[in-house]
Length: 176
Image (cartoon, rainbow, N blue to C red; front, side, top):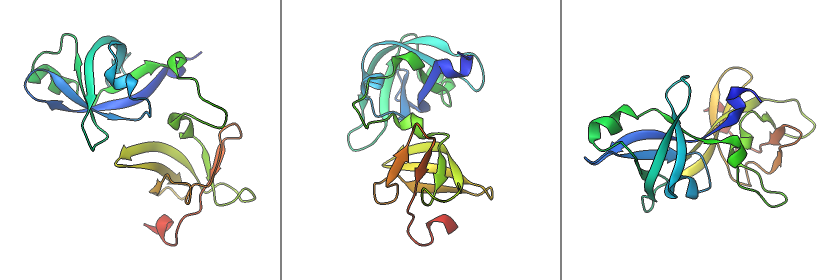
């Protein structure tokens, strides 16, 4: 397995929190235990090799999709600031098991986007955002990027194994 496929990016450190080394993490995962339960995690700065760090504690900010976490050895605001922009990783073999018909949110990245199953692709899912509402960032073939709300009415079909999904965008959504 290539080095890139060993890791899942499940969040990003976006800001320090307070004066005692806590950080805010914007999650890219629907599994809160990754941000709350103690144990080994990995951080990665840019394209550098990931490094191990111990998650000491974590909690979700009520009403927001942001977690505040504490790491061993990060005990002041300056050390916390140094982590901003780092990717928060888990090993790819630590994916939770899913029931039939479920999928991991991260499996959507790289899927081709179609308007119907008979049409050619119009773009590709390149990123995900969960800032209040789940959004798919789609790069259209013409090069423009658009955000697609990830709701059943707009994304009615997902075919992970086949590598594509169908969108039914409201008029004008792809023109933004």
